[in-house]
Image 1 (cartoon, rainbow, N blue to C red):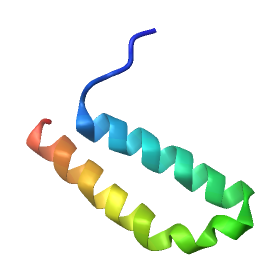
Image 2: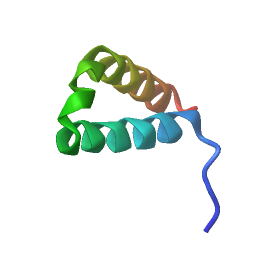
Image 3: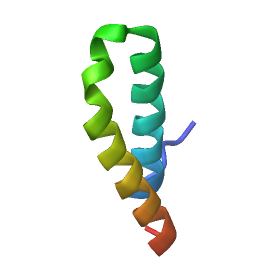
Image 4: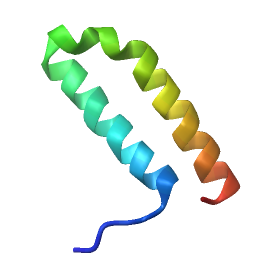
Amino acid sequence: MRATRNPGILLLALWLILTGLVYFVPTLSGLGVLLAILAILAGLLLLIGR
């Protein structure tokens, strides 16, 4: 399987992984701001087609 080089998709994948980890590992709950920033960046990159 080949990994994508699209930054928007990569940030979305990272956001999904971190969101899942926060759910299962409550000590990571302080990552809310980081997750919000990643979500905004991923959305913007996907919208502009990068």
